[in-house]
Length: 509
Image 1 (cartoon, helix red, strand yellow):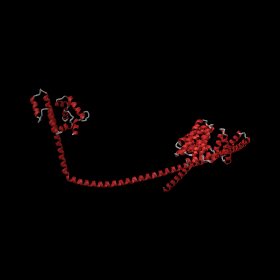
Image 2 (cartoon, one colour):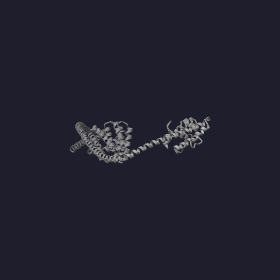
Image 3 (cartoon, one colour):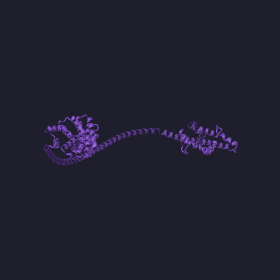
Image 4 (cartoon, one colour):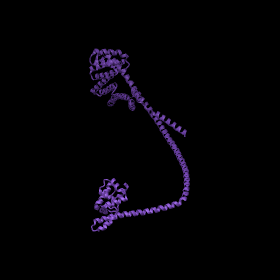
C-alpha cells in the first residue's frame, strides 16, 4: 500500500512539472522587447502581433507603465503602416494610461500630431504638437524638450511658416546634446534660409554641411545633404556642381534601395522560417499536451481506484468495529441480566416467605377494607339522597309560597322539616350548600368578583339538581333571565357554549 502511494505521488509530481514546463508564459516585458526586436528588423507584422500579446500580458500583470509604453510603440508602428485611425486610437489609449507622465504624454501627442498632419488636418496637428511642447517643458528633460521643439519646427517648415520653424529649430538645437544630430539641424536651417531667400545665412550653413559631410555616418542624412546641395547648385546655375551632388545622391539612394530590397527578401525568409518553427513548436506542444492529458487521465483513474480501495477498507473496519462493540454490549447486558435475575429470585423467595407468614392477616385486612368501602358507598348514597331531599323540599316550599291556594298549615309543616330555614328560598339553598361544601360559596364570591349577584346565585344553584325553570322559581326570576345569566357566566369563565359550569368551578377550586 505504501509503495503504491509513493508511485502515485511521483507520477503526480512529474506530471505537474511537465505541465508547468509546457505552458511557460512569457512576461509582458519579454514580449515587449521581442516586439521591439521585430520592429528593428522591419518585421512589422510580427511586431504588431507581439505588441498585442504584450498589451494583454501587461493588463494581467497590472503594469500600467509598461501598458502605456506598449500602446505608444504600437501606435507609432501603426502610424508608419499608414493605419492612421488605429494609430490615433492606440496613442489616445496610451495618453489615458500615462496621464500622470509628462514625458510619455509629450511623445504621444507628437505622434498624434504627426498622424493628423499626414491626414492634412493641419490645425489639429499644430494643436497636438503644441501640447507635446507643453508636456515636454513640464517634464524638465532636455532630450524630450529638444525633440518636441524639433517636431513642431519641422511642422511649421512643412506648412511654410518659416519664422516659427526657425525659432523652434534653434530652440531644439540649444537643448540638443548629441553631436551626431548637429548636421541634421544645419541641414534644416540651410533649407529654411534657402526658402526665405537669405543667401548669406544659407551659404553659411551650406559650408558647414560640406565640412561635416565626411564625418557623417548616417546615409539618410548624406542623401538629404546631396539633394539640398544639388538643388542649391541648380538655383545658382552651377550645373557641373549640381550634377556631381545629384550623382552622389542617386548612387547612395540606389544603394539604400538595394539594401531595402535585400532586407525585404530577408524579412520574407525570416517570416517563413518563423512560421515553420512556430508550426513545429505547435506540433510538439500539441503532442506534449496530449501526453499530459493521458498521464493526467491515468493519474485520475489510479487516484479513484486508490480512494475506492481505501474507502472499502475503512468501511470494512468500521463494520468490524461496530460488530465488536455490539458483541461487548450483548455480553454486558447478558451479565447484568443474570445479576438482576439472581436479585429477583432472591426477592421472590423473601416475598414468598413473608407472604406465607402473613397470608391470614392479609385476607382479614382485605375483607375489612371491602366491607368499609360498601359502608362508605351506602353512606354517600344516603347523604346524596338526603341532600337532594332537602333541595327539593326547599323547592316545594317555594312553590307553596307562590301558590296562595295551598294550606298555611301544610306550608309551616314543610318549612319546619328544614332546620335553620332562612326567610328566602335561596338562603335555604345556600345554607344546605355550605353544609355540603364548606367555604366554597365564599371562595367563588372572592375569586370571581366580576360576577353579578344574579350570576353568583345561578352559580350556586348549578350545584343543585334544579333545572333552569326550577332555578327561576327559587330566585323569583324568569327562565330567560336564568339562561342569560348562565351564558354570561360561561363567557366570563371561558367556558364553551353549553359547557359544565360546576366542573369549571371545581377545577378552579
